Every structure is written in structure tokens, then in C-alpha cells.
Amino acid sequence: MSERSTTPDSPNTSTSSSSSTSPENPIGTLSGAYAGKVPARIKGAYAIGASAETIFTIAFNTFNFFFYTNLLGLSGTLAGLAITLGLFVDAFTDPLVGALSDRWRSKWGRRHPFMFVAPLPVMLCLYLLYSPPESLGQVGLFLWLGVMAVTMRSFFTLFHVPHLAMGAELSSDFFERTRVMSLNTLCMAAGAALVYFIGLSVFFKATPEFANGLMNAGAYPQFALTAALMGGTIMLFSAIFTREVIPRLPQPSADTPVFNLTAFKQDLKDAFRNKNYLMFLIGYVFVSATLGTKETISIHMSTYYWELATEQIRFYALALMIGPIIGYFITLRLHRRFDKKPTLIGALVVLSILTAIPVSCRMLGIYPENGSALLFPMLLGNYLIYMIAGTLLHISAMSALADIADEHELNTHKRQEGIFYSARSFFGKASSGLGHLLAGIALDIIDFPVGAEPGTVAADKIYALGIVDGHLAAIPVAISILFYMKYRLTRKRHSDIQNALRRRNQQHA
Image (cartoon, rainbow, N blue to C red; front, side):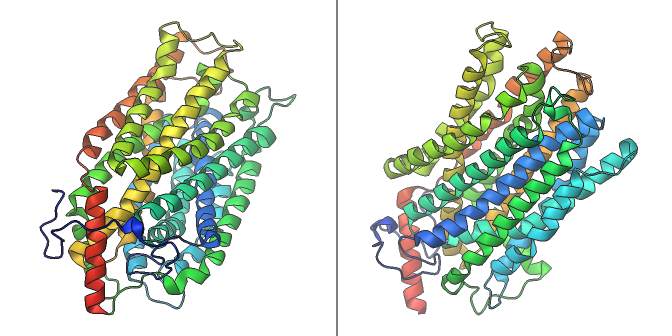
């Protein structure tokens, strides 16, 4: 797509940036509840909902693969396949919920009715995921994991997609969207750090029976129950305390037809005609493959490759929290000076390099040996920078999606944040599915032992594990750069779009 659209509504002259809208002007537009700054209470209540996403994500992605493969003995390939099969369901349910909420009419608006339905079934599924009946065998464990994972993720979509779409609708201002998504990302980090630290400090701590607490199978249901209660409560809090913004949020136009499958297919076709969105989407597939593989295999790497104790692993929560805070301030400044595209690409370059550095340095003999006092600080430092880059990527991507939704409105006369942000939800879950599948197949290929004690695994298998985490995982994120290079929506182009939308809305008022 060229920087200038050829649609009839596209402006052919440059005008002032939408970011110049006075923050004191609270009048909403078709593309935002507020033309300037969003009130802090609304921004906070919205953003805290993102904590629920990472609480459930960490509880699900980080621990279940280790639990099912290393403690219950499920084949790595079957464990990966159980999660990946859910992607076929997600590929339908995520855009379905997005399109449905885009067209929903009720006194509770477009997004909130779905957000209130989700918490209880999601909480129940997470607990059951870690409480499989005994003696199920390979097929039984495969089915239990697959059904619980698909059900949980499908219900979470009811909260996650409308919640993300609402974030894009809070403001029409170019920079305020970055602030909203930055705070959203900080809350995501807080949720991830909290559940990760609690899990490793309380439930998986070393005991007289288990020197490595992650080997204690009985601790996983208790951990799941705690994470479920935390995440579900936060979901309800966010939905309740953002109700006051409902009257200000954009609503379906009077001529928008009610939801039906024909309209749903047309919504998808319209979205995929947008080249910026298509390149964004394909790039996110590759990013998800890298992030998911590393997250899935992280416990194996910490336990067997680096031979860290759970008392050390838990302090990765510091990087989970501090990295996004630093990334938050860096992103705000970068978006003031540069377009979102170079920030995205720069973050991807850093992520691809940092993915490979620790294992590469170990193989070259320039990383400390396991047990050295220097090893964990170096790993933690690498992970901190990794989290900063990941934050830059996430904030920029979520803010860019809101800009793409504006471009889509200009071209099609339809607001479809739900459709666009369903991609974010889908590929967040795709990272889990792809990560489980790739990691599971890899563990089976290298014949990694089940339930082994750290320090007892053969050197060749440890070497192969490092290749998977440090080198193979870096390839997809490097490929994603090629697609983000084709993203063409600049700050100037977005300003033109916003002004064209204002003129059109004034004509139709």
C-alpha cells in the first residue's frame, strides 16, 4: 500500500497532526471516546484488565508444558499437538468474537457484555487443566490437555478481544493511544511478574521432599487455583470500573446489519484487503513462534541447561516488572521522535540477537560455568534487555493496530477494532500453540529424559536443548522483520486519515 491511499475519502493535502488536539477537549469522535487524554481512572481500570491476560498466560504457557511432559510423562509431541489443535478453534473464535462485538447493540455497549461472561469459566478451566484424573494414559492426557486448553482459551477470548478493542476506542489521539497501550503493557508486566514470583516462591519452593520444587506435582493444582482467583477477580474489576465510559464509546452505525456469517466473512475480507494489516499479521505469526518456543521451554532451560535453583529462577520476575517500566518510558520518547515502524523493527532486531546470545556465548566458552556466581546476573541482565525490547515491540504493535483501524474506517466506513484486535488475541495464543508444538517435537527428537534430576542429563542432549532455545527459536523473529519493513502507515499519513474522518463525520452530523 502506498503512503497515500487512493480511496475517495483520502485527503490530498497534509494538515495538522491529530496529536495537537487539546487534552482539555473531552469530546469523543467516531474513532475515540475522548479526543485528547483519557481520564486516569478510566485508563487505570482499563489497563489493569491486561494483568489478567498475563496471569493466565504465565500460569498456562510457562508451567503446563513442564508439568505434562516432565511430571506426567506425556509425549512432547502430543503435548504440543494438544495446544496447537486449539489454534484451529482460535482461528475461528477470535475473529468471530471480534466481529460479533463490533456489531453488538445493548445498553451495556459493544464490549462489556462479553467481558462479564468470561471470568468464571476461565477460572474453572485453568484449575482443571492442572488437576487431570489419575491413570489417564497418553491418549487420555492428550485429550484432557487439549479440551481444557481449548475451552479456557475460547472463553478467555470473550474478555480479551473486546477488552483490547475497547483500548483502541478510548482515544483518537495518536500519542494518547501510545500512553494507553503503554500503561496496558505495564499492567501486563505486573501481572506476569506477580504470578511468576508467587508460583516459584510459594508453590514451587524447595522442600525436604523436593530439592527442586518444580518437581512437586502436588503443588500445581494449588498454584492454578490461586492464579485463577487472581486473574478472574481482575477481569471483573476491569469490566465493572470501565462501565462509565460505555456511553462515550463508538457504537455501530444505524445502517450496520446485525451479525451473521455472511457479514462476518465480508468483515474478514475487508480487513485482509488492508496491506498494512496483512503485513502486520504475517509478521506477528513469526514473532509468536519465537516468543512461544522460548516461553514453553524456559523451565527446561533454567532447570537443566543453566541448572538454576527455583530460588534463582523466581527473580526473573524482577526483569518481568522492571523491563516493561523502562520500556514504557523509552517507547513514549521514541514515538515522539520517530514513526512506530522503526521502533517495531529496532525491537525485533534486538530480540533476534538476544534470543541467541546466552547459548551462543556458552558454546563459545565465554559464559561462566553453571554454579558460578556470575552466571545468574548475566542471564538476568540479558533477560532484562529482552523484556525492554519486547515492551517496545508490544506497545508499538498495539498502538499501530489502532491506527490501522482508523485507516480501515476511512476506506470502508466501518469501525472494526474487534476484528483487528482479534489478531492480537489469536497470535498471543498462537505463541503458546506454536511454542508447545515446536518445543514438544524438539524434545522428542532429542529424546530428552522425563523427570531427570538437574545435572544428570547427558551432555549431547543438553547441547541440543540449547540449540532449540538459542538458535532455532531466533529464526522466526528475524524473518518477521521482512514483513514489518512493508508496513507503510506513517505519522503524517495517520494525521491525514484522522482529519479526513473528522471532515466526513461533520458532513454526516
